[in-house]
Image (cartoon, rainbow, N blue to C red; front, side):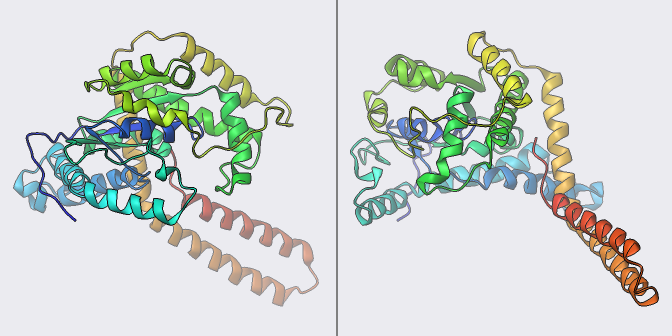
Length: 365
């Protein structure tokens, strides 16, 4: 069921919970979702990549200046992005009742679902305004620049958890039936480093008024005060219902107290612990930096360019492979007993195939 929005109560100021996976992003998303003005969302995954596609579309529509459609209309980049951002915002808020219906059906179909608990509700009253929404997709740590283009009024909550706990949780998560996040301890430290560095860089680029750093230990250790401060930052009144999800464990890796990773100390671990200490001990508000924001813009543009050209790179690599296979076949026919040259060609072919696979993966910020 769709509803007509009361535009006097709706704002295009979504909230994104970012940070490393296994840092408590899910529980914080549900905490904020209990607020009367904040609509909880499932992890969306697509908005970051969509921002890259919107930029690519704008470049395509303006690349010939006044001889291009968007160029001839005088459509500016912020206006183009805002049209899509506003449409997404309205679409989400218009479907709040549909969201509630689906959540209730899921809860009733799964007796053990957390959604059956009173602490986890998409809305507590039909009179709740729900004028904004919260999304807890950890991967958006790498897409903050693009998301700000779609939603200039968005804010980002960087939930920072100690790296040791995150690594332990990542390594055990697959055993709970969830997808494998990492294969080993080194990958876990690297994942934490990449996401936390991306969030910290965005904080330095846009300032603490846009990217709010919040410690997981404060959320679980001094919950009421921490959520009060967070809601003050969001310019929303404090509501005790936001505390209720913290009484339950959801999406847990169930890490045994005696679980200790067995990999030797890695370079990533040393770097991660240094960054963790820096961010947890220094809570001084950060002012925005135009220079760092320009770096994020350049990285965003680089990813757009990569996405635009990845198919061309793929086709080029396939042509190289086909040519090498043809030469290999000729070599085998001309010199069937010469094994070493054949081995060299096979090695080169495998290297090219590996390059093709890597080129089809978009680089992260």
